[in-house]
Image: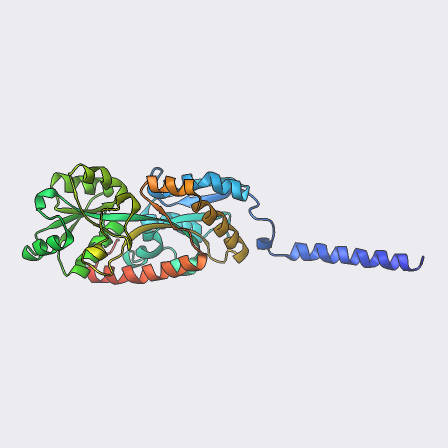
Length: 330
């Protein structure tokens, strides 16, 4: 018995040492995550939609992950500056980015010299929210429905104008997609954001506008704008009376602004899974969904794989639209 004890102690010691070495060799991804505060890069200034989304989600994410979520606004170049920071960060899940449709799917076709490759340098985590757009008309144009607009536009080719939130924005591309699918040429007029575009349509400086849903509701109710349709594939609960453009006479039309969460490429799968679980659970909370809806967005949680497939599809879709109109940003 006495001779067995040293052997047992040596065996136990070897086992402990092996376990310690295995732990030391284990990849950082398998260690506890998160180990420190998470930096969330927002690619637009404070007060913008992506910033508001981040700040609505932050307290719940902090509670779920047990670490602060520090929002870092890095605007510029249509989102490219902020996304480039994410793409070049350490792939450990402690630097994330909220990217809009532009930075994640449109800009590769708009900018000749992109600082990153969306599909190669970023790891999709989850879709966060979508922004429905609305096609509205000045009442003086005399149209109440989409078919009526098509008749007027075809009788006056090139004479009508549609305001949008800036060249290369989702609102601009929504207007161009409408032109292509309807076989029309309504001249897109750029403004610096949705609010100025809406003001142009109200004043009659333009005949039409493609603007975000939150900007329109009160003006439509007051008769200052006529809602011809929403750009989403399904009707929007906060404007249930408005048809989709697809059901109003343009089958297959779909265009929404959207925001999603990404990490640097090569972020370990367990970390991506942990982040996806925290964010999607938060997005499914009724209170969070209601708060997002109050600022004109719709929660859209999903898997990382679904978001990756969506980015690929959107990239191809808008590349075709941009090629057709020949738009570039220098």
